[in-house]
Image (tube, rainbow, N blue to C red):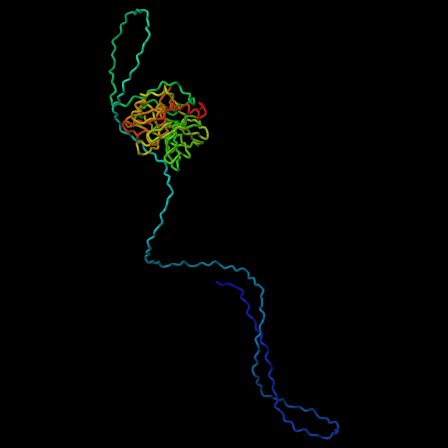
Amino acid sequence: MRFYSVSEPEPVTTQPPSLPTTTQPPPTTQPPPTTLPPTTLPPTTVPPTTLPPTTLPPTTLPPTTVPPTTLPPTTLPPTTLPPTTLPPTTLPPTTLPPTTLPPTTLPPTTLPPTTLPPTTLPPTTLPPTTLPPTTLPPTTLPPTTLPPTTLPTTTLPPTTLPPTTLPPTTLPPTTLPQPNQPPTPITTTSGSPRNVYCPNCGTAPLVNVTGFNRVVNGAPATQGEFPYQVKVVPTISGFKYTCGGSIIKFQWILTAAHCFFDYFGKASSVAVLAGDIDDRNLNDLPVNTFITHEGYVNDGRRLTNDVALIELSSPITFSARLQPICLAQESDINYSGLAIATGWGTVRQGGWTPHILQEVALDLITIGSCASKVSVPDDQNQVVCALTPKKDTCQGDSGGPLVVKLCDGRWAQIGITSYGVGCARPNNPGVYTKVPFFTDWISNKTGGTDC
């Protein structure tokens, strides 16, 4: 391929012209001068003389040196060439022979340690678990002594009945339960209908919870069965803890004071999650503040005034999965009956934590029996206790509700999960803050008895 360009001008040197060659005549010798007297001659007429041509020999001149001549630079105007269009060039395909490279040995490479960000796994759905039947030892209740009852004497007039002939009656055989049969369903208390604090408290719109044979040994809850249950997650010195709680008003959660303290100090913030039995599907309820009882004390053996409240930033919109629980009265506590505890705590001491809310039926015991087995506050009226072989609340259930069924079919909270010695240890009851004892404190902190 050929390209055109404008070359730089070459310098021009001007030489001087050559000198012509001259033939010099030979030298002539003159005679000495003669002095003559003046002579006057007549005019002479000389005819023209014709001389032949003279040929002179060549003359050699020495070389002439001319000094160099410097010319000023010459500036040429720029030259504009028309664009050149070249036809496309087609190259034949090139075939290269295969190249064989010798093996390469690399020195060992040391990589710095790599820190990976935490990995979030999608929720895992486990198949339903079938537990083998559990045989409970027979339960012996202490004898109950009733005070004698004196009835007034009633005098009825004599009544004469005609003779009555009855046909023979055959009764079917009666089968009595064996000692290893599950306890009977929970009995309802005689409390009056609740209006503390919300008119529709203590209901479960999605299910009809009537019996407890299926939850005697503890079991996963049914969706919508405990719509008042919430998960409380306080942050203390950068560490997050798990507790339970219950909805009691549009904007208030009831829980335990000890959820907000550890060895490092008091909680700086708290989160409340609710709306599902699966803690992976819970919704956040924004929090405004939390209040712990002014008299809360943990002396290492017992907890006193273990009650707290959480105020939400905005009211809850009640639905089938978000409902308030009624607060019980003292008369609602049947110390020989059963109560239900719920929570996302560990299934045994130091054990694993389930994702599905768990429920368990527990036997209530008298405060005298409880105080003989575990340390209780000086004012024993502020706690209620439960003791059932191999069943209990555990770590992570703190602050959760302990409830009983009322005679009108609704549910009322009698206790707040507080403390115990281990979990489900023989002859070691669980201790619960008694809700009726703190009703006035709760009303005062939440602005009265309105929902």
